[in-house]
Structure formats: C-alpha cells, structure tokens
Length: 85
Image (tube, rainbow, N blue to C red; front, side, top):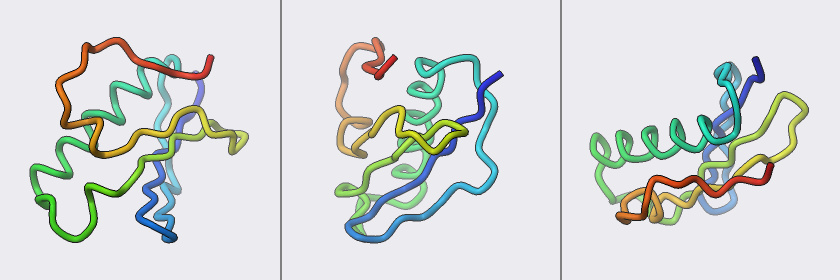
C-alpha cells in the first residue's frame, strides 16, 4: 500500500510529516487531508494564518499528489476528490 505524507505549508514555512500514512490511493489521501484540516481548524481556530495554509500531500517518492488549501476544506463542496492520478 502506498505511503502518503501530509506536509503543511504556511506562507514560506513547511512543516513536514516525517511518518506519513499508508493509504490505498490518492482519493483516500484527499479524504484524510480534508478531515485533518477540518479537525485542525476546529481545535486551533482560524487565527494564526491557518486559513492561508496548504496541506501538501506527497507520495513516498516526494512527488506532490495534491495540494489542499485549508479554505477549501471548510467549503461545502461535493465529496468528489480532485487528485492528479
């Protein structure tokens, strides 16, 4: 099963995910990314620049699979993921 890493970019700072998570495909990574962002915004609030943050999901080769702006996680889009695969 592929491993995906959920790195958070806030402006010029990148907070790396050193462990990642094994998931079945990029669509599942999209679902996990959305849930992670929503939980973080719920616990931390929208102060401190989190609304300008982006979750960069990479695969085990370091290639960016998707970039998920935090603002998109709070919008009520359909649950159809938009991934590069």
